[in-house]
Length: 240
Image 1 (spheres, rainbow, N blue to C red):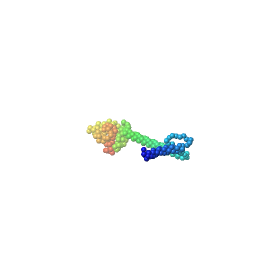
Image 2 (image 1 turned 180 degrees about the horizontal axis):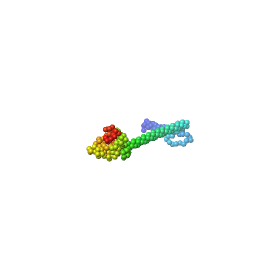
Image 3 (image 1 turned 90 degrees about the vertical axis):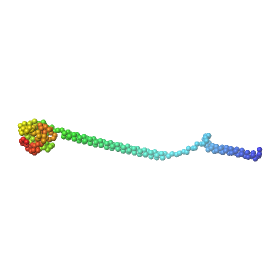
Image 4 (image 1 turned 120 degrees about the vertical axis):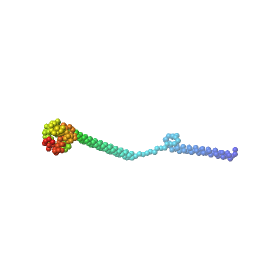
């Protein structure tokens, strides 16, 4: 084999060897450095990396106390606010209840007043609607007739009416004259004040019976006729 070839081959072989050797030396050096960092009394751990040491931390109790005091202060303030809100809500509820009670009392009072007024009106209407009771006799007939005459502005006193009734019929509502001139003409005078039928029909007052023998209707019609002819029944002293 040529010399120069052997020389180059040897050179390349040595070079690879040297590289391997150098790498081994570097590895051993790193391992040595690693072992030298471990204290002599510590045990050796075969891990790839050593765990990092935890730094010591110092705490101040003064800061914690300050935070606690501040938190307590905030809680106390919150508690006061909650109580104030609850008090306001209670006051609002009390005011609303009081207002509602006042409104209900006012409404009840108004209802009572309305009911009282209604009862008064009903009593007045009943009293107004209820007919006044008159006796079924000469006194009662005259008084009832006068109440009707007053509504229609027909004049006549109790004494004047009674006086003419006693003279004409003696107080008999069924009295009839069959002998005077009117009877001869076929239209006899009838009733308490001896009114002929045509006169009764002409001076009949609405609201009274259309019956010439009805005592009240007879009195009212006769007084209405006397008022037209003589001014009032009080002015009549004889047949009319």
